[in-house]
Image 1 (cartoon, rainbow, N blue to C red):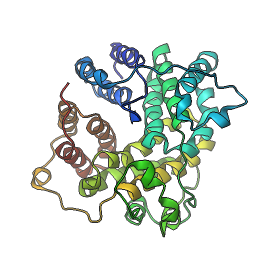
Image 2 (image 1 turned 180 degrees about the vertical axis):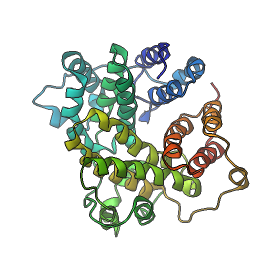
Image 3 (image 1 turned 90 degrees about the vertical axis):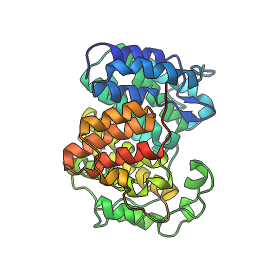
Image 4 (image 1 turned 30 degrees about the vertical axis):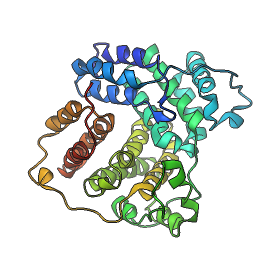
Length: 349
């Protein structure tokens, strides 16, 4: 992680804005800048933010503080977003951040679908930054992430915990599609309970025996989703990014949590990835086009491609894809970023 202070400067700019804009779209700024700084693109951060911040809404104000005894009632109430942001700002000023995370992780995890999984993804980036360096600005970012997650807390339709024999690649291929993909994510996820085979498809994943295996399985989930993106992204190139970045966020959070909580992270991350797959997967895969068959270049070139492209989803996918490539050596992980840059419109700050 860079020690130039660029990330702190970026967070300070972003913390004057809200976690959402244009109704309910997620503010990806904190996630993208954390990835850019970590990969050595400090010099590009403020130029990128100059354009991105112009999209965003102001920080929402609270109206009624969330009390310690009423948090259950306030969970999942987007009208309390400002209240939740204030609650976690206070929590992180008064208690060690790892204690706050340990308390709230099992409370928030069942609502992992929050903000189309952006609650957990933003929290994962924040924890990753804090594990490198703890300061007030990074603590504030964790508070913003947890507050957003709490306000948008959203469970996934009933499913069985993993108990099968399938590896992640096979399990993802077995997830059924929702019948109507004509509207937004909440409408699509609302169909899951009635989809034949939904519960069994989630149960088909091979479970983890112990904490270390849970961590390994989370990495395998991110690997499988990233490699699958190249042939399935046309279903929805933006939303299917989260099948890879959500398990990556949980994986990056594990070092800050007791091992007793790791298995629950695996179950929730898998359910989230499966749900987004069911909601947005295309009817049929496609073969890799000529832009991929010619080769994606090195990992460094691919991340630079993502930064030059500028879209926040391409940057976040590149961040995950580089982890996948380091683990697997599979060039398909880098090809996924090229595919995303082909399908998603560039952002020019």
